[in-house]
Length: 103
Image (tube, rainbow, N blue to C red; front, side, top):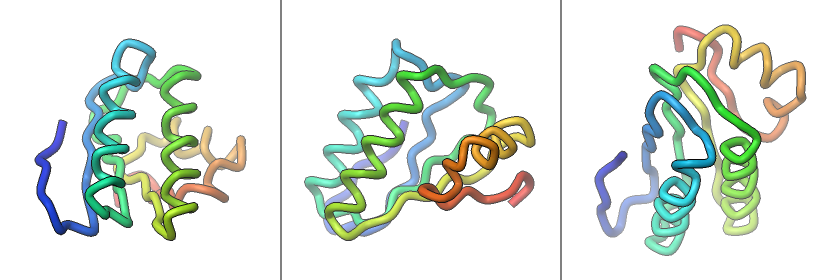
């Protein structure tokens, strides 16, 4: 998924094609490890993502909450038009910084 490095304050996480129940434990562990290493900004790269279920969304919201409490922030980039509209419709773009498709 991504490379670990101590002393880094920004980290890009590429979850792959699906953010679903079968990978949430790995994704959650990766985010928690990053927080414990002092990462203050996590960028989740949705490039190539095809689907996300409620558990995947739950992990992203939990990560956002953990980062916020630690004074950090979360960004989502490379969303599809469909995911971008979903984030806007559900007001999730008020929590996550979501880059519009193509940015």
